[in-house]
Length: 224
Image (cartoon, rainbow, N blue to C red):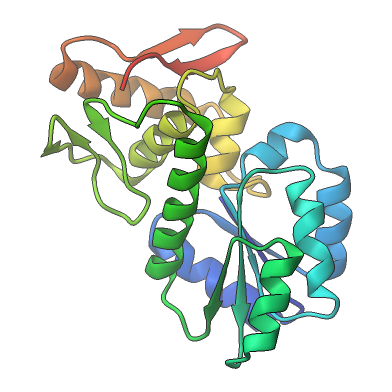
């Protein structure tokens, strides 16, 4: 899930809609609401966020370090105008990347993936490898170099499990990542159906089930 922060409702609604059209859940928050939320949100909600997108608002430079104190997700700032000083100030404040509007959401997703990939490589002593390869730009995953066509929700679940490979995640965490934190119109039990179908497709390609599930504890990808 992407969290967008801006004091203009048109910007929040516009980017949230564009991300949703790419199959990525997104939520827009005004700066005051965001500051309150990031200070008080429980860890599972924070962990469901894959990136924070900061638009233009007052005292924006104070936000990145607060985010970093609670989350390892990418923080990307959007600038309305080209300004070297503003860009340098934002990097000094702790953002991972700065883009200039207008920018397509696919480019933002590609930048998020690049930031996440660098973070994972820095955290591991061995290079990433395996049979499954996932993307965050709308492409289907690959198994042994061959595309595996997946419905949008199943693709996003696999991306989340790969990002948290070896770590057990709960049904609620997966739901928040795929559908967003503030979607009350869908029962989170729908995740069980999505995962059941995903496991079947993966077994057909891999010859075994790569997803370990434990009742009340959640799901974990055991191989890649």
